[in-house]
View 1 (tube, helix red, strand yellow):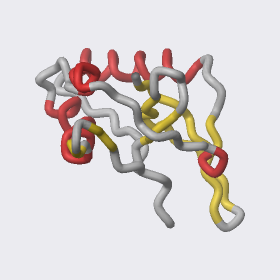
View 2: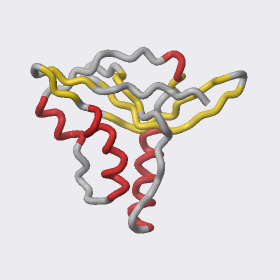
View 3: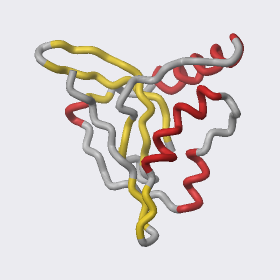
View 4: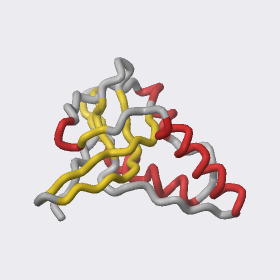
Length: 122
């Protein structure tokens, strides 16, 4: 499961907020979020507006996450759940957003893991 969330970042006395895709285990614990804030790109005006509307629905009523306080938990995703990470749209912007997931998953003795993307040093 995933959604868009506002994340508060702080470094060297500077504070900023950005929207990231956040990924959850079934129990609601966070196992990853995108290193870079989301980018809104659509193949049409309508598609772009739909993306913005979905982002607003996601972030409007959820608390802001504080990057330095996020407690990452180990990923617990079954093989059948992997299908939920595959984009249903043929849109290149949608595919690009999930490309890191496809390349980050590792299969090892039936266990899956994903690289975490903490904020990078600016």
